[in-house]
Length: 376
Image 1 (tube, rainbow, N blue to C red):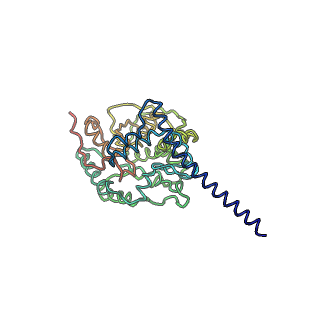
Image 2 (cartoon, rainbow, N blue to C red):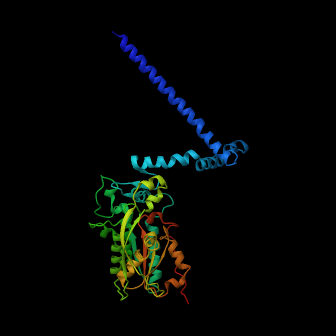
Image 3 (cartoon, helix red, strand yellow):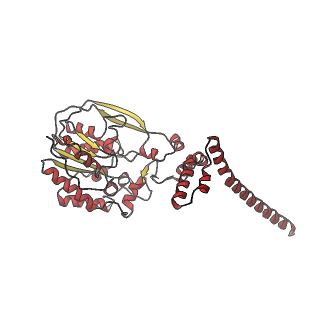
């Protein structure tokens, strides 16, 4: 009676051993095949195999690290397999890599922005006190010339729509990041004029304030911000801007950050509807915007003349001008203004726009930058 069980058990044991041996053989074949294919490719290109460098130079920590970097960049297997592995990670595991976090229903988020509001400040990142010192110093310098400063912190996308990042999150009822709240409180104490987009963006809207595939605001969010800033400035001119409705399909910057042609080819672009205004270019603008990529999107990018600066000019009824630098609104735009004193000619109001995450992560931090000499 025990014979059939013994035979079955022996057969299962043999199959298990055979499977293990097959996996070992496959693994050994991969160990041999991958470097062989790499050497064959380099030989066909007329190059000496890169692996020989290990035997002709003294190994150091730096040289080994450099060798590993070159091997990773030149590996034919890496180039072939990486896009497909990235696609599996993205679509099956909802993993977008180091910069992109995959949310719900097609929403993507910028991972450093999430970290800036969920993790403790790291060494080298700016402190709220650095920001308020730079802002108040600039406000005072502008005020001494009769120029008004209005600060426009733009919320991180994840600060407005945490519910599209995680099912366990709810729409915010206040500013999520305590450091951002501390900045608002410090500005209030110092008498700095601030436009509160956080409160406005908490209001329910049929149209999203942000693009799903992008770190930036949508045309709707941008228009709401421009209108709020224009109302805060409180000066309305008589300039009319001819308008033109525009539709376009666009891949967001978060899609490009994935650096995967495979993912790119499988995802549809985001459909966008916006309004293009015929901008009047003039050196006599009385409003100057210092900003980052939120001031650049749709302005220089397709379709053009449909970005924040043009929308602001439309709501103001007068021309406006700008200096912008992607990621550099904390310090670089003020340094750029210092190099071009003529940009302040005729300016009565400066709108300083920067992204919430730059309270910590602004390029070059928050330096004290003087105003340019008065243009003669």
